[in-house]
Length: 102
Image (tube, rainbow, N blue to C red; front, top):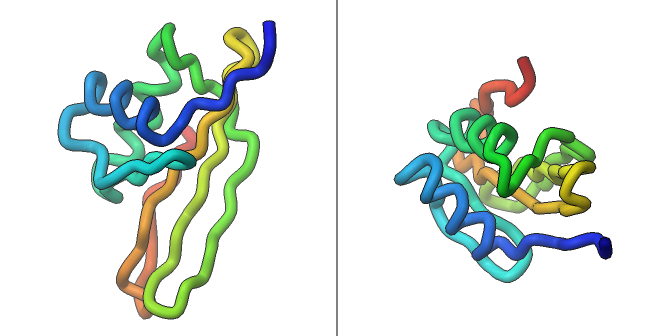
């Protein structure tokens, strides 16, 4: 089975089905989450059989002039698929997000 990259729009559709109100926006590459719903949405995407995004492959931050972005690359080994999830942090002087790991 070939590796499947989920578009941001596909992830957004699944996330909204699982955690309504969790998606801030989406594009062809990534799904952007509301910071306060990120942990709940990632947990839902992890345990949902359709998405099965159980593995956090990469976690990084991007420093823009006016905000930070936290980028999560998640993967399902079972379903051979990847997705890119993001959260924007607009409080540069006090930027923080809860941990998505348990």
